[in-house]
Image (cartoon, rainbow, N blue to C red; front, side, top):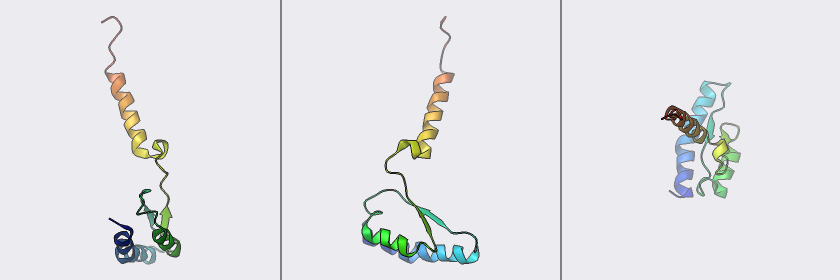
Length: 92
């Protein structure tokens, strides 16, 4: 995918959907979040989000930070629990 394809998706599908949500539920501003892909950070795309900020809230994704990535924290918790379950008494 390149910035032109992404722009067409945003402008042709995401914007009408967000406008519908915004008008249907007046107190709700739809939130859109993508990652830090080069395509998502192209100047044209950033300008598009700035232009439509009254209809769509764009959340910036933290740049490659496992601490701020919820799934990484979940995997860490799961790993710790599995390790605790598999610990054998020292007398074995």
